[in-house]
Amino acid sequence: MTRAMKVWLLMGLLAAGSAGATGPSRLEVKLTPLAARKGAVLFRTRYTLNREGAHRFMAVEFGWLVVDARGGWKEVPHRTVAEPPLHATAEEDTRAWAELERVDAEFKAPLDWKSPPESLVGLLREYGFTKKDAVAKNAGAGTATWSPKALCQGQRCTKPCRQRTLHEWRSGDIDPVAEPQKPMKALFVHSGVAVFRNEYDEEDNHGAFFTEPVVEEEDRNPGIEMHDVMAICVLPR
Image (cartoon, rainbow, N blue to C red):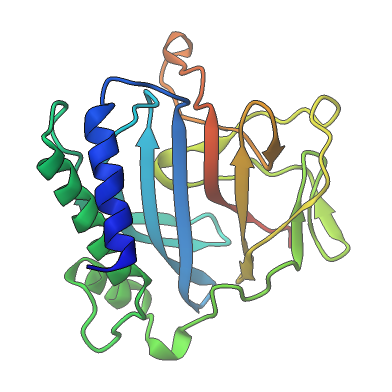
C-alpha cells in the first residue's frame, strides 16, 4: 500500500466518524491547459463544492473545457466520483477516497492522444486539437496580471475582469477602494486567454471572491466562505 493510499484511508476513517460536523463551505476548481489551436484553448477540469462545510467526502467532477478569446465556452463532463451515502460506513468512505486517488492519477497523467477518453473525442473532432497543438501548463505564466483595478497584459490594460470558471461561477462585483490588492500574476496565458488562481477566505485572500448565477435576487446565495479557484479572463486586444 502506497503512502498516499494510507493517507486517503485515514482521511476516510476520520470523515466517517465526523460526518455530522461542519466547517467553512468551500469551492475548489482546477484548470489544466492541454492544447491551443486557432484561438481556442483546451483544458482538463476538476471541480468540487462543499456547500455545507461537511467534514466528509464530497463529490468530485472531472471534465474538459474549451475557451476562446471571442467568448466561446464549452464544458464537457468526463467522470464524477460520487459522494458516499450520508451515513456511510468507514469502508464505503475509504472506497470513495481510493477511487478518487485513481481518477486523479489518471487525470494527471499525460493525455494519450492516439486513444483519448471517449468523453473528449467529440471536442477533439470539433476543434481539431492534436498532439501537435499541446501546450505547457505554465505557458506565458506571469505575462498578464489581475487586480480589482485592472486586467493587464504588459502595458495594455483594461477595466477589471469578472473572472469566469466552471458551472457559471464568476468573481463578485469589484470595489477597488474597499479591496486593495497587489496585481495577481496569471498561471497561464495563451491565445488571448489568461488563467488565475484565487485563494480566498474571510481572513486573508489572494484573488477574487466567487458567486453563483441566480435567476431571482431573493435566491442569491450569500457565497462560499473559502475558495481555491482557477478562473479565466479574456485579455484586452
